[in-house]
Image: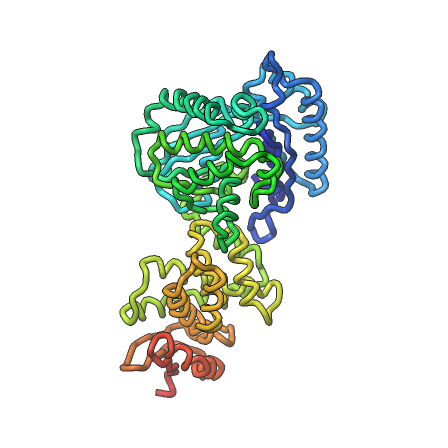
Length: 509
């Protein structure tokens, strides 16, 4: 697929969404536009199982609107898919013909298995996780998948979702005790026919789709979570149960004011979480994890990279993509700093105990530390931090992402301490020390190429008492700029590492 822009339209049972992706001149990918319309198609199915004429006309109008947005962006390819509401409609062929004839869009009618597979692809390309269950609670269907060693093992699509179960068990948005028991029994009976769901206890339950994202946002607001990102957000099972009961008991007028909950989910959130809880118990899962990607992301990867849609290294791909989105970054300088930082870390590992993944964090930080210069060079550290925590930097936990961003933008231990204080309890005092250790290594690596000429082609590192000897055994020139920069940061480095860095050049020995 070589088109510069790709449009993905997802005709879901609860909402209809458009996402427009762009491939930049540097080969990076980003979302440049998106639109969402509440449809509640599952709710509108009549007694004969048909999508009524009024709903079809509204759907066609919406498709034309989305097509015009794509035309505005000169989108080269539009991929349109439909899921459970149309899949299960008795007049589905008529609906698809109308959309193609009146909106000029051919619609792929996804099977439940295909929907699960694309959802898995979107999730696995955004999370560094090996084994687990994946659930996607839509408006008219719920997909459950088991994956092992990052490979989809088994999946099933159940013909129930948050919209049609709301219609059946909570028509006014309120789920009474008796109705809850009936809903749970209905879900449990369907799940019991898929015995494999209970064979792998202790795995996390990863949730994609609007229901689980809404759950994550409400939980974050409830606990006053300091890092506002719902992707890769873990929630203990007992806290979901407590939040469910609190939300279920709220009348709709008060539920509308619930922080984190969008107005279009006020009535369907409780039945949606009830489905999640039933699946959580059936799988005997360890905890929930909210995933911010899903079906549309999977469709994008399948469309853009048909030969190899699944990324082998999630973090490496997203670091490369984020770097390519900021072409003003001096690539040769950044590559030199990255190599030097990793060499310094290897040489200093014996001096301080560091976590196993510290190498990964420093590698990430030293690959992205200059992206903020695309906004303002003089404040690039501040902008780098903001860009890193607000971009699609996948494969890291929230704590790890904040650590990487703090290391990339490191200025001083006091600044790191203030930063950690604003993100407690995600970061703690131990993390401040870790950020200082890795941050000073990065700053030393930057100092060693301050002229941005890559003058040092070989650096030998050794510890001699309280001195960190940096011998430029292969270098061009006297490295006057680099020597001055290393001397200028020597005191700060010593405060953290207990070592004073000293740069030597061959002819000065």
